[in-house]
Amino acid sequence: WEKRGELKDEVFDEVIWCTTASAPSWLRDTGLALTPSGFISIDGTFQTSHPGVFAAGDCATNVSDPRPKAGVFAVRAGPILRENVANFLLRRPLKAHELQRDFLGLISTGDGRAVASRGGFCLEGAFLWRLKDKIDREWMAGYKDLPEMEPEEEFVGITEVAKAWPKRGRVFEDAAMRCGGCGSKVSSTVLSRALTRVQGAAPPEDCSITRFPPNAAVVNTVDYFRTFHNDPFTFGKLAAVHALSDVHAMGATATGALALATVELAEERVTEEVLVQMLKGAKVVLDEDGCALSGGHTTEGKETGLGFSVQGYLLPGFDGFLKGDGSPGDVIILTKSLGTGALWAADMRVKCDGVMREEAIAEMLKSNGKASRVLVEERQNVTAVTDCTGFGFMGHLLEMLGEGLGAEIDLEALSFYRGGLKAAEEGIFSSLQESNESSRRTVKNHVEAAKRGGVRYKLMFDPQTSGGLIVFAKNYAADRLVELLKGAGYDKAGVVGRVVEDTGG
Image (cartoon, rainbow, N blue to C red):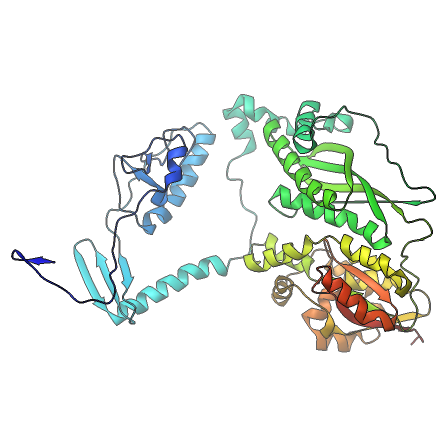
């Protein structure tokens, strides 16, 4: 450094070079007007050069009244954006706002102290670090400890939007008068474009044709549910995994699937995109299982939903795995974790940890196909199989226990999703939980089990989406089966109990 014309050396350990914010390069590809330094140019309403597109925070600069790049201005922009987005939708004049000029800045020095600045004043001390720590923790708690969700008034009324945008709003304005029957179908134009995007152009036919091996028994099943995931592609994959599960539990090979799709009422381009993404996601799963997406039916509705009618066949000479063929002495194997019902109930309330949610999705996306093929190869040692879905582990287990059979379950051997356990500990359960728990009357030691097991016991009744397989197998083959299932990718597979004689009482 230079002092009075002389160059001086300074010994240091590290250099921290502080600069102003710089604009990300991708902003140049947006087509929006930018400032000379590369930030999005906005006015006092936060609208960009493109009508109806708004920007705030570090990516944008109000060219007529610029502010420093600081988080406080991004936070204060929230209510203004909300107001002006509504104004734009209703074709009302946008309101310009002037943000504060001075703000409190607190920077930790890493030694339990902090420096505060506001305008031309600054201060330093340990008490400022405690103040900063308190402010930061309160801010983060606002994203973690969320209040209970309550119904609120519509942000922007559908009727008001329809009046403001006659052409685009007509679809919403006429929603109450949408036809039923075949008049509720998605338009042929949208459907044709969507199917072409999913699996290429093909002439439409009234039915699909499937050919089966000679002497093969045909199996059919159907499954459908409304969406619980905000990504239609992932939802499509989950719906396909779930629908195939009945075929896999039977030990059959799926050959074809007919989609049953409901798409929430929207503009045609939105309807098409949602339909395409759902079917593309489903097709990934179906293709991996060797099952053709051979047709289906689409309709408009209040909520998006997806399901499949799946057809398949059993190998000649194999009658399939039935639920009621178990015997005393069989071990009980479960291939996946429990707790999806409680987890997604918490997610609907914005109370599910994101990491735990993704952990569950990763396991839910595992098709039961590989497990089924393992069991078919080892069918001489397998006595009964079913998939663990809406009635919960206990409900489906009861379906497998015929007259004279009971089961002993090792609660500690069951695997649970972390998000499901957390939700249950907070008292959050699926809306089907109460109905499923009616089967607790069949548990001989219910009071003791409920007391000792706590939320783990309750999650045995939790309704599962894309759950695993419940397997009854010969005791001597248990270790081999579990090893093969783990090798096939089901790392949560394990022996969770055994079948016993029901002596009554």
